[in-house]
Image (cartoon, rainbow, N blue to C red; front, side, top):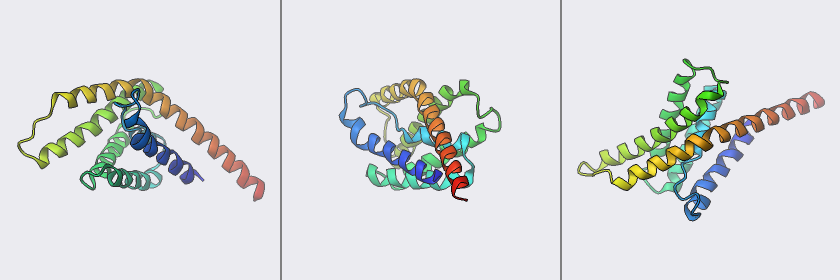
Length: 171
């Protein structure tokens, strides 16, 4: 049932990112919410559970983006492994690091996207508007990222408790 929960959350984030955010003035410069889900998976789920979701939603975003296939999947995998590496140095339940990690995740994803795009065209120059967009997304992530992670963790923990109680009831 945990897998179903992650699929539902991931698809809600994909729908928000691809259909709602671009056409709403408040969310027009909003970051990719799947970054926050990947940070959550890196902090609170084992690689056996998380890597299939990271790859799956990376490919889903690759299909919807219309860009280079594998770009999102690569960015999400790198981000996941960076967050997994961070868990070796910081405690997973320390909520003080969540804003910094969310900020890092959004900046890292944008860095990978801009970097790969720049590598594809050797003469390309990063426009000034891209820097403004990245800064705006970083500010959004700094303030909303930790809230989204905490909400996902709370709902996931509640879902697991419900699922475990249901299994005991029918066992």
